[in-house]
Amino acid sequence: MIRFIRPTVPEPDAWLPHLRSSYEQRIFANSGPAAVRFEAALADKYAGTDREVILVANCTCGIAVALLAAGASGRVIVPAFSFAATAQAVLQSGCIPVFCDVSRETWEMDPGALEDVLSRHRASAVVHVRAFGFCRDLEAIEAVAERHGARLIVDGAAALGGRLENGAFAGQQGEAEVFSMHVTKVFGIGEGGVVFASRRHATRLRQACNFGLAQGDVVMRGLNAKLSDFHAAIGLALLDRIDGYIDRRRAVADRYGVALASCDWATRPMNIGAPPMQMYPLLVASERHAEALVERSLQRGVELRRYYRPALHQASAFSTYERGRLEVAADLASRTVCLPVYSDMSDAEIDTVIDTVTAAI
Image (cartoon, rainbow, N blue to C red):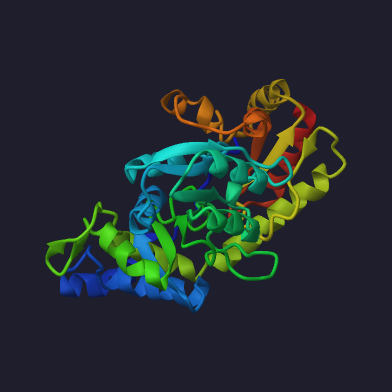
């Protein structure tokens, strides 16, 4: 059986040495020595000169504290084609999600739809989602948000280590970009996340991560969003390997792309930059095709998944919130199927997935 997810996490012998200082100092949380080193290493590898790196317990907490640090209140615009965590983070920050449609070409928040929603619903912030870790320039989204006085936070959960088309690493846009380091992600450490924030945003963001505390006082709303030294140690060990993992995943995606290029039943968005490829999403002809493809592939020993389904506005918990027109988000959610991608995927496993999917359809 080829499972959809097969995490690749450094073995204990690789990360235990990074905890030596933590044990010597008996500090395992609250910016312990491993966490401090991990933040610095991530900043050195990925962050621009005007960004600070703040570790968080997970990406959902990261989005919530980024909104708190930005002073968001009331309505926050989010795309309807996303994982539930995006809307849940907005609710955790004390705000209310308003759902926006996405582009059929990019699968991400459509600037025209965002303009329309912001014109009809006054909002304090926008959370843009890098769908499936895609790494596009978000200049058009930034311009719309700025024009309406809304702060922009980027949910880049699956994009850590990805590059935009201009070669820059994802993490430099909006007031903050938030990434996941959940074990299902390419940069997976178990549980964890990281925020790349503008320097003027970073101090309040660190305070929001630590119950809103500063100099012995509670100065703002906050929560406990700190990352432990144990997770940071795994991250430090993973840094030595991550480039190879991403290269292998992109090679897997390239093989899929070549094999499926002539298939008229599946399409892909264009101009996605160079994402780290947590998975390989396809848009198939209909919801019936999506259901059949997943079922028949599983019968042949290959597990596929349908992501961002249902669209957020169709989920029971979010069905009463305000929204724009959401036809594209609903359509994409019904027809998207994802193929597995591993950091250590063999050529034989790639061939099996390709042969199974093309036979199943």
